[in-house]
Length: 167
Image 1 (cartoon, helix red, strand yellow):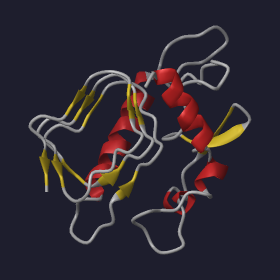
Image 2 (image 1 turned 180 degrees about the vertical axis):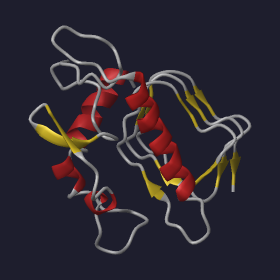
Image 3 (image 1 turned 120 degrees about the horizontal axis):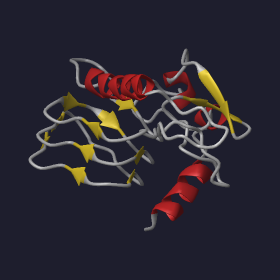
């Protein structure tokens, strides 16, 4: 499937703040939604919708950029490298927290990375349904503690899983 088709499918799924309220928190408490999981996150306005920084797309349906990828566009303030590093650090920290004793898997469904990201040599437990991994996604020697959900995930660059371990 082409990346454009995958983006349209992701957009139609609606991982905006309002859309998260309609999505069940699959491995979470009964009756809770992804909006409950992400409660407390600062919301960003883009393309007429509110987004967590984790779900903010790189561009809207018309191709207008959000600046999340750190690239410069006319009239657009790009995200600083430190902001992208912090985002990826927080994604990884959430994925790792899901692997702790007694913890629920991290509900990272629908997230959009900004650039290359590495989970290499870490132990994680997370759901990445409909997530978009921009650039290289490195899961080399990653231990997946619990189910690994990647249904409808999109990888725009290399996805490295060897020699990952699925527990």
